[in-house]
Image 1 (cartoon, rainbow over the protein chains, first blue to last red):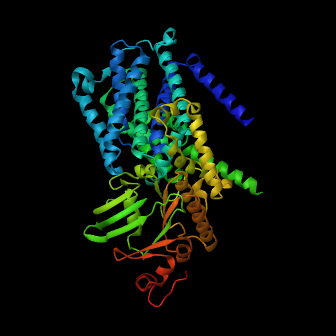
Image 2: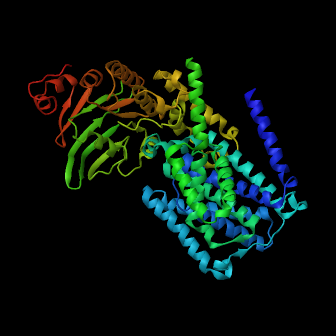
Amino acid sequence: MKRTWTRITIAVALVLVVAFPFLTNAYILGIAQAMLLYFIYAMAMNLLMGYTGIRSFGQAGFWGVGAYVTGLMMNMHQYGILSLLGAMIIGAVLGLAVGMLSLRLQSVYFFITTLGVSEMLRVIAINWMPVTRGPMGLMVQPTSMGLFLGRFEYQTQVYLLSVLLAVLCFLGLRTLMRSHTGKILMSIRDSEPLADSVGVNPTAYKVFAFATAGAITALSGGLNAMAYRIVVPDFLSMQYTTIGLLMVLIGGSGELWGPLFGALIYVGFNEGLRSIGEFRLVIFALIMILVVMLFPKGLIGTLKQQTNKIKQRKQQT
Amino acid sequence: MLEIRNLSKSFQGLQVFSGIDLTVEDRPGEKSPLIGVIGPNGAGKTTLFNIFTGYAKADGGSVIFDGKELLGKKPHEIVRAGLTRTFQSTLAFRQLTVKENVLVAAYLHEDFSFLERFIYPLVSLKLTQKKTRDAQERAEKVLSMVGMLDDMDMVSGNLPYGKQKKLGIAMGLATEPKLLALDEPAAGLNPHETAETMELLQEINRGGTAVLVIEHNMKLIMTACERIYVLSGGRIIAEGLPQEIAKNERVIEVYLGKGMTAHA
């Protein structure tokens, strides 16, 4: 019964989300668009950090590469969906390459390597003027998204495609984490040497998680390029890695619904505090410190913990 | 089955041990061996385990398991060859349930293809249903054997210490090893739990799995093991039947202390 109600609630929410562009104005739709693409980004970060225990400090590299690949392909008049597929493939290949090179390293060297790669990509983006237009940024020409979406306005097309991709990513990751591979990833998070001692090849699974997260992060960066139609080298900076970390920590690391709430809260605060300009970054830093100190399990993790406590108390009485 | 020959190890110039020879015989059709390794703290017992299970490098010597050299292999490759170890302190995947812990180990023999490992799990659980169901059945069988079926849905980090230790052994068993190497399975357990562990080791051994155990609990070692190696000062100072070890003056002197006797 409870499960039926949950399904009905999710179905109604999904219908509202899909109908949203026809009920609201462009500004609000822009915020909803940001929530969707950050939700996708947070899912990738959650796969890495929350489920596999990999702390990547260079995830912005994938975000930025996804944005550039999508932007460049769209400027070559490719369908939006194909441009995103291109971004995902490049993100996965980059993830495989960086993962195979660096995931054998101890954590501190791994941090430095991932950070180094994203910085290297940022420098390339600044200096490869003929392709990226350097610090001026790459303007993205709107094209049709493909599929059945061509009949709608451009902003609505991007939004509906984002909904579709966010749902697909969520279902894919939910299936993954319920599968044998998901359990193996979580075992590596809990103890890599112990996983190794029961026959798991940790490096192979970590490279898989890193490449999958790379593809999903690039997808999210691609949607960002598509939605806001500009790509700048700053997308490859540490700031975007921090945003990913922040969303996972706020929502709940290793929680399926954590990224959704992390993205809603992050984008909500970001918009709400827009009037104070760059100072809002200080507030985000403070939120991050407070969450880590007071709610280390994040929003969903803490809610779960409290619900379990109440259930236990009821059982005892 | 396992032949360790002339094994040596040093850390930053400090010799941990040298010239270590240890054998676990392969006896097809007969009772599998249950061998004990004892020695004072710092004798290098865990280092010895770490070397032949791929967690540390040796300076010299060889470790042959079923005719193949193990030195240089990674831990998961050694498990696949049939030699599994447990740890003294890292016992379980703390955020997974008891059943999931054993399942991760039971997946080893399902031989998932590349697609089954990395592509199908993103699409549908049905695509790997048969293999995962087989693994579940084997995991439940192992949990039943160690008497933990009732705990299978508990998060392992919430288990009492004694049960976590037992879970560690269950995980080792789920890999279906030829040789199970246990690092102090009774450390920190109360007498009742120690007796249970001893019974469990004997049951595992009767089931056809060879067991090599490091332990400080002399009662367990003397009662359960058929042969014992004593490691001290970087050397094997004695090897033999429990009764012989209990009477060995050198062992009594370096390990049990002067003027002590052990109960066989």
